[in-house]
Length: 178
Image (cartoon, rainbow, N blue to C red):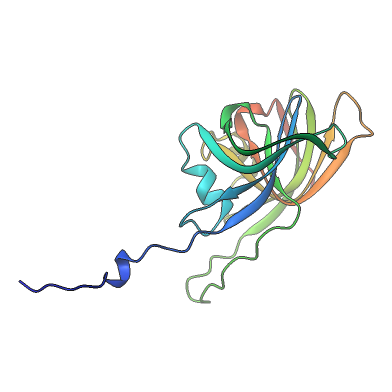
């Protein structure tokens, strides 16, 4: 047997990076940072969490999205209580080789939850049925590009995200917009 004093390449820890997010529930709005660990994308990180997400530098936001004085260095939030996790400025995806890239078809949708109207763009594999994709239960959070969110209780309150993940369990109604 041979010994090595340094870790093999696959044993090297991946550098962690954090993403700024806004987490929205029926009567909740929080701005925070999420440490993705070795995950390259927020959607991969959220999809593999088992019930909660750990936040850093979390601040409760008022209904218009402005920070309140309620801030904590760390917070744990239950995913099932969240309607949407959004990023105002989405991280740019890593380049993909042309021979492994799968082109997708983009479709605009509108979803209604108990407290919000959400519009955004979903990316489907060619030949996939939009409504079957929207009605599926997995993954738990539906990735959306260029998402727009409005509150049902006060339609004047709205916000937008380059990238968002909508909790499928909160969707009450859904429709194609194109």
